[in-house]
Amino acid sequence: MTVLATLSARTFVLALLLAAGCARLGAQASPFAVDNRTHADIIPVVSREQSTAQPVADLILINGRLWTGSSSQPWAEALACRGERIIGIGSNADIRPLAGSKTRVIDLQGRLALPGFIDDHTHFIEGGFHLLSVRLRDAATPEEFAQRIKGHATKLPAGRWITGGDWDHEQWPGGPLPTRDLIDRHTPNNPVFVTRLDGHMGLANSVALRMAGITKESKDPPGGTIVRDTKTGEPTGILKDDAQSLVYRVIPPASETERAEALKAALAEAARVGVTSIQDITPWQDYESYKAFRDTGRLTVRVYARTPMSQWKRQAEIVQKQGAGDDWLKLGGLKAFMDGSLGSTTALFFEPFSDAPNTSGLMVDDNIPEGKLRQNIRDADKAGLQCSVHAIGDKANKMLLEYFEDAAKENGPRDRRFRIEHAQHLSPSDIGRFAKLEVIASMQPYHAIDDGRWAEKRIGPVRIKTTYAFRSLLDAGANLVFGSDWFVAPLSPVLGIHAAVTRRTIDEKNPGGWIPEQKVTVEEAVRAYTSSCAYAEFAEKKKGTLEVGKLADVVVLSQNIFQIDPGEIQKTGVVYTIVGGKVVFEK
Ligand SMILES: [Zn+2]
Image (cartoon, rainbow, N blue to C red):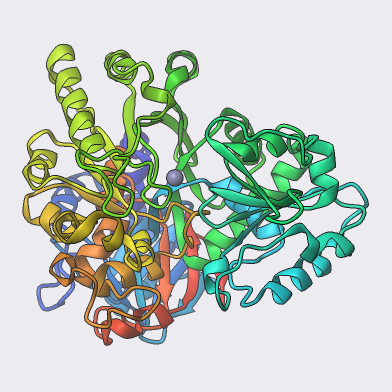
């Protein structure tokens, strides 16, 4: 065993694989090519003892259509894992001999398997809180809205807050805003503050208004509106933008137990929709929750945690002292904001909004006074941390590209992988700069089919052409990655792929696609959710493709999305989700 002792664990497993009679090695007739590099590496170091080695797989998938994402072997039928890693991939005949008496063998019955989906942008634990709360997103009328709140309140102890909700009054006939009168009688003992799905307004019941001290006499705070009854002048319960903080400050912070419950719910949702890794926007208290789950083996999604850039030193210190983390939980990225959002007319543009000509958006806290963010990026980059910044409007994106260019010049060459989160509205002249400056475009396709319903009235027919410019970015050589922005949009990557490929708005009013010239192919969308996304968190050597030695993160779908009509993609379900060789979801 002296030879073996010097081998890496990976090589050892490969050696066993060879010894186990893996026919794929050297089998020229097989359509499933051998990774020659690996083969050559391994042959000279196989020792005799292994010729008696037993099959080694813990889990085997056979009879599948495995899209590997690797150019050397794009398709396979079967895959074997041992521990957390893939130890073999090839034809059924190649992989079957790796099964032992304790191996679980899953017959995929011809289904499509892909590398596990990686989501480029989540607010994961917040998403869990929304799952546990009342669901109002698809409440079709004010009455249904009220009934759902009533139903939820009966399950709660007196005094417990009801928050979240994600209601959308635009769905209701005539689109009236809800009022506290709708819900007061159903919630006499629970304070309520449920928010619209964009988070820019919320409805408080009378209990919550009382706790927040909001009365007829209260003045509107700067940047916010307390909506009032036109006849009586009494608050209706609707609080817009910064007026929401009047209520937020009286809502007690979630306890550790509540946070853990939310994380558990979020993990179940991720498993259900095939997400095996997330690139999270992580408040420090969420990081603690992830750590607690990681330490007790309860994480079933891999977390790349991006903490607030304004506190970059805190992260730099941890990384320096303890390292960035492991394959389950890793620090290394930071997140900041340049501007607001299109929906609230706060995204920063060069020209005013078409439907709000008195404003062209605004810069937010992270860059007030202007230039603060430029400095933070320089410093954090110098400390070796990855910078991701939210930019929506064309001006915000251009300024940010300049900040990135500056920092790179100042700090010298390094593998830094700057990211722009959303990169939603781009000046045509900036599209090529993503590739040139090696800035990753981190985008969320579901937003395109959501905003696409009304974006043109806000920014007009010219700017709309380079909105969610997936195709232009790819053609210009940019690294394009996809995700959800959950809880703001649904977590499901299948819905994201559907959005990127069809660009059919959710109101079904653009059957041929909204700005159809910006569509991408299914394969491009899948790459943006797998290998490209792995690159965006410096993990392309570990995951994002199905290859021997990589983490066994796999998703199996109910339909072959490469073959079906693109309009059908959204009906595709997840049949299995496998993370680190463990089945974490099965239908
Ligand atoms: Zn976000």
